[in-house]
Image (cartoon, rainbow, N blue to C red; front, side, top):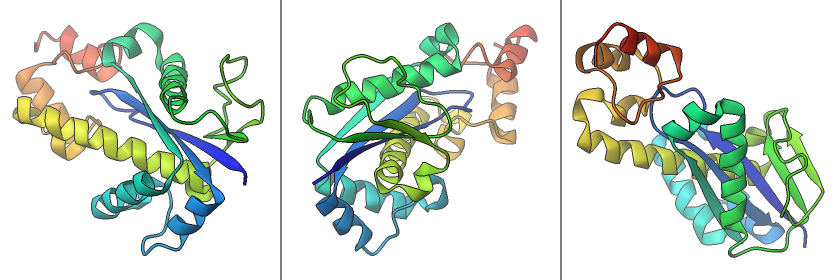
Length: 206
């Protein structure tokens, strides 16, 4: 029975918080269980928070293995976005390898194969597919796992920094986030290399 590892990331465009990638190893049996469930398996951005969390629990109970890779704001500032996405995905696969060493294919959401020339993978059958997060079940599952993990992290961060509203915008650039930056300045959880954050620093609003 073929096992497909789907990979997706979340948080690429955020002003604050980590970049998170998930790798999900999905076999045919788990795929059937998830597709027969009450909630459609699709791109996490097209699901409500309630449905994402329900699917997150269902995925974790059904799939062969899951890995989650985290890249900090400081690493993003140092490496740049493309290298950070690759690092998050490689870290996700490294964690997945702790419980899964046998899979037939890797599918990455998007148009860029971040694993070209990567070492330590268990297959050379690697594809990057645009909108795979909405069309390939393993990638949809990875999209959901990554989104829920990052959103939960940002909600915990909001308890420490309630003035920023991280539980509402989860680090993305909203009017409320911009207003909080102007009033309170930046935190160590902001991405200093991003232009909106650099603008706040330049204007001395720290």
